[in-house]
Image (spheres, rainbow over the protein chains, first blue to last red):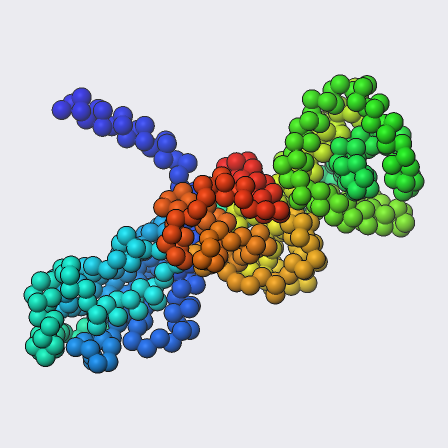
Length: 177
Length: 341
């Protein structure tokens, strides 16, 4: 064990100096992320899209809270869902992590709020932004992908919209502000 | 990177602006002035020479002129006119008689070659602007004050270069007069070009907080100092006077370059697209982005953000396939990136 510890320590020592040159690029990254997110926030607030909104948390512009309201003529009409968006330092070259904070009974959303949406994974493009993400999730609500569900029960119930609506209402808790 | 470039550039200048008085009085500053004069003359002459013979001739021409020149500023005008006639002879002379020149001049000509389009335009434009200022000096006869200002201003951008050059000059002037510092001059002019591009390079990354209003080429140019890094926003007059000429100078495009003609921002990094970026169309789908984001994407999945298709070319081929000014600018940037880091 002792030797292993020594190895681990020397390993860290070796890493530490080599990590030294990295911070500047990282700060560059965070600068550009910052700029991009500020720009997105501006665009989002100016766009006036109904049914979606998002705003950074007080102390961290890399963490946003978003809101989506269910579209009309869907089983989610009249419901409102809070989401959290965590942006990596590599944003927009890497997708943000988006989760439902509010429980959402949906075939492509699991019990922890994780969302199965291609554009948030392998189909991510740096051309997407918060607005398009939220709009995509909003449309995902009304048009789930039943073939690869995270929530089997929801996927099975989807065919019966009336029952589904009841289930949504039953599970739905208006998000605390 | 704003902080990066700003921090990198103005710190020396800040130190410089604090004690310009001391510096002026030192021997070094006198040499700097002399050097400045030489550089300007060289630019000036090369402007004429470039049109006919390219920048190397201009250099050699200048070698001669320096020897002949002595200390009289007024002779400048005359010399310039004579320059082209004498040029051929001088060229041969300096080639044969100063072997010390030859190891360096290939270097400088390489630099010229790399930038070719940009550099030529740059030098000629730079020449025109500096010629106007120096001829102004000749006419008014009030050279010293102008020189002081010039030295101060230019010090900001390339203090390090200046010091090195001044030392080299001090050493050189004792033994041989001109052949040695001629290459230095040439090197400096191309360096200053690169330096400016360097700040440009910082640009996408640097995202200058001052944003679109300020052509970032000016960061190392004249107008920006530590205390006025964000000045262009609040004092548009200054920014127009000092920084507008620079993009013309270094982007070769010149004329129509102005804020209104730049259509939009890069959709990826939200930085303004510069002239190069707006003429850069990496994908058939028409999705535009700045060169820096494009490069970054090439380093990753190399798929177009607009259509998710793979970019067709390898990174290097992409560079090569970009035509005209874009190509030269990319090269210049990558060079300066290496220098900066």
